[in-house]
Length: 563
Image (cartoon, rainbow, N blue to C red; front, side, top):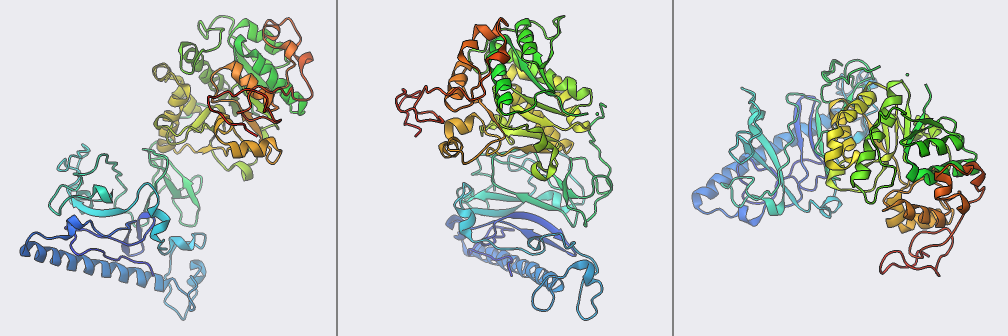
């Protein structure tokens, strides 16, 4: 069986090293405290060389004590696993095991729904983890880590009489290991992340994984939707304030429900994109009857009404003085001024009790997306669903949610999410980004209130990231091998480029004679300008296209033909 194993000849005080364990888990179960640590390397040579006979003798004593402790932990593991085994090695189903008369069965234990990997450790080969950015690691047990002695003062009060408050496990890259047993354990750490975990709970697990960085805990508990913790239940996401008895110190405030309106916002500058959305939906026989457009000027309102859509327009100027021209660049003053309306377009129908699917106007549906969100066997049971922006920058961590296409169920958690976003107008102005502010609040509510967040897969919900950077996927799409539910033309500098790209990829259904000023002025009937087939036209050979555009110029310097 997998257990603890020691490497190296001279560990510092309290050093424990375990070979080839992939997952870092703090696990207490039954009678024993088990520590599983992912450590893949012997100690650095600088730690194995003792400077004197006395030091070598001291290190030898520490090593002997460490090995004795490892032996005791392994013995506990073996005893526990032995109790869980039938003759022949199979694991007992614990409810049935209580009827056993010829074996040493525990009276209680993990339910049969718990995977066998949770009942015992599976040691992974070092190659499974050693090729990641973590490289080779070590683990060090240190004393008094919270009092500022090592340059880390969390400012939190001590827990008197509790030994665990004075100790911590430091996990580090091999290159960040302390230079000697007497050196400060964090001396070579450029960055330190501290996780303070729950104390004195014999069924608590902590998982540390390498991924797109995040600085909030994701917390799960075995419990029903309401009521106390129950080991027979599946793991369910909960907030930071959830107790074992089901009480929640941080329940989302209730702001007190109908089918989904699908709001979108539009100014005169973007009416062509809105008209294309309607024309594409008509070509595919997709109903747009419950789409509500939040128009920010009279021209957009007039054009929206001619397209046969519901429109919300504040004639008294409640939206403020908003620009009618399009933004010249992402994050400029025009762009930022329009972002707050994106909040109101979702907040208002949410407060009326509706579930909401919000999207920008540069979206094309291949089918009605609402049945997807109504079928939890397809989309899972989450409070919120966001398309994947594709950026993996710090400011969008950890969800990289795109605020141009998302679905919210209507409950206390989601209504309070939008209320909090409504009050964050100053942050939107400061960051020049509705999306960045939304993700920061989304992350906090995910951790604090247990708001569940799902980022949609890019095979069914692709966007501009796939268009510009994932050629293999786009080839499959253009050749008819995949069929997305929708497409969002984001990650593109301006409206003109969006139209050109959509034309050559077969996503444009508005006839050319009705584009530009004709549809914006309301002088033409936009529905009469809809084509039943896509208006395909080549512009750039180095951008995805549904037909070969080899005779067209490149868009990007040094670009290569898509086909």
